[in-house]
Image 1 (cartoon, helix red, strand yellow):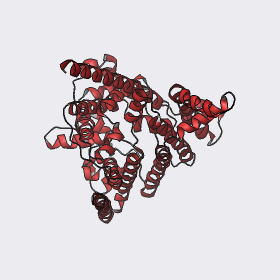
Image 2 (cartoon, helix red, strand yellow; image 1 turned 90 degrees about the vertical axis):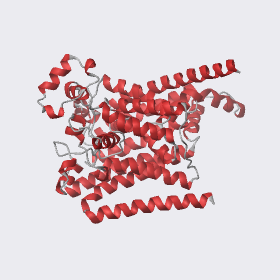
Image 3 (cartoon, rainbow, N blue to C red; image 1 turned 120 degrees about the vertical axis):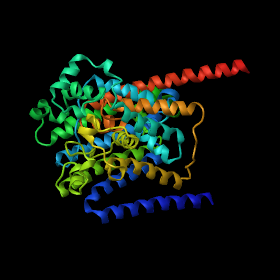
Image 4 (spheres, rainbow, N blue to C red; image 1 turned 180 degrees about the vertical axis):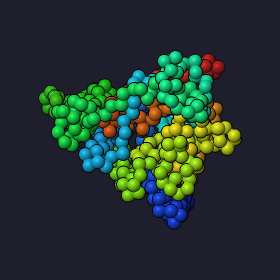
Length: 472
């Protein structure tokens, strides 16, 4: 009976999204651009839920329990996605753009890493867990990634951290005062915009040494993504898996173990969880297909940003002063959640357009005309459908400490995503696969923050157990 009920729910949600897509298309063909985001989000949600893909889980499992399954799956996805990114770049069908490189990326990753462990889910993980009925993840996403992030980019609470040099640099940019009201504005215009933007294939060294399209495959794919990912797989095997594998191997093998056995051990580690590894491969492929489709849409409609289509449809009020909205062109989390939070705050009378983040860069469209936000909704709905089909949906209200961890972790994720202009997906996964070394800076900070978060939880649990035993 319960299984039948779950199937009905899955059909209802899928059918509703199909109906919504048809209504959009009937309203205006330009909404095909938005519909594509809906269904790629839906696909991501199904894959994330089925493969249990979560960067917080990967870090927690590795550091707390020595289980590398999820970390391995993420690296496999990264390797496959980097190849597809290189193919797309070589055919001029990529929407990827690198980010400013600097120490701010490392620091932001550190903050985000602590937050994702506290809340029990990264940015993408929190969304798919909402689809499973996880109330803690809802708290983290809504009050942290949505409301907290929107407030963070529009307040002057952090002016005491702004060096005079940043203030002078920001003023020199000549931006109108109407969009320069926050500490984050000073940080962006006075520091981030002055940092170098790196993509290995676009460096002079790569241009000189690598002819034609080979620079995308050698510099972006091989040097920036595949080799580092392969080295990390080797490190994970050597630190967490080799001893146990070799011990078992020695019992079944005549003679000494050697290099071939280590290769077998690495392969065994990669294939230990076929469900996660296969999903890693498929996620990499779908993420590449997403880029291809969005680039095709841009070519078809003759635009570089969905804001141009909104203007054509008479919704220019949704866009920034540059006529744009947040439209990454690929898988991305957090910026659209910030937009949703800002939209809600505006309904309560808070002017959220007087800053660079919304007023200049991303605009503030109504949720039903926000393509990237629909992608996030799609992730939730896709995860909901997959959880229902797998009989894994369970509504769980957060209680006690979980409320605190959800709120605090979500706020740290929201704050940690803004300085680096992205999260575990946009600032790490996408950038590394696209040849941007700043992705590894963010990833290093994120893993370091996750390590600290795991250590904190271990301390907290031991302290709590000691008190309970003392009371007993």
